[in-house]
Image 1 (tube, rainbow, N blue to C red):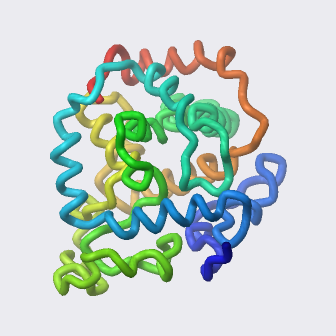
Image 2 (cartoon, rainbow, N blue to C red):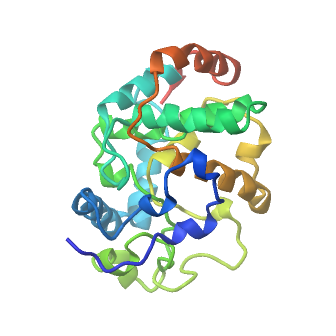
Length: 264
């Protein structure tokens, strides 16, 4: 299958990594060719058809009571042993390994920021929603604002939004849609998925992470988002980490910042 898209536009926002820390970046996030392309495209097509303002608001209500499950952070990590992300063109191994790869990449580059190591471990835990019965298109993949015309940076924008009903609604189909200029990210309704869900889980359970991760000042947050993104992307490799060896270190971080049994 050949899909008419250019290179992943999000690469513009991703800082460079040293060559020894990652394989050739051109081989990551290839949305034009590769053995996983059909699967990835199909997932994004469903996502971009059904992620509407109404759908997102309903999901906030459905999961906003955090009554799905009671479990610790490492129990959630273990659940991801059962999940392979259908939207990811780079990997076809369980997401639990990617969590440790990302965390270890951050730990090597920022040995003095233990909270940042933990962020690497936590960042995809919202994907447990798939194991709660949610379809992957409602959980995985890159997020985007709903309630306005999709921007050029959205993966497969030109070939996947044709059947989204919001784009036929004059309230949501313009460049700004239901938003006002400079309204701030805290007022933007993002597509529903693992990122938004995990953010809400962290707020509900009062994770003791520092302001770098939860500041409402968009421009202040940006450097940390960019710094995290390169580890999320460029630590993916088929060489899987020795999870048993790493668990005690990360259990210590969990005990420090988000201990005990949590509500999901």
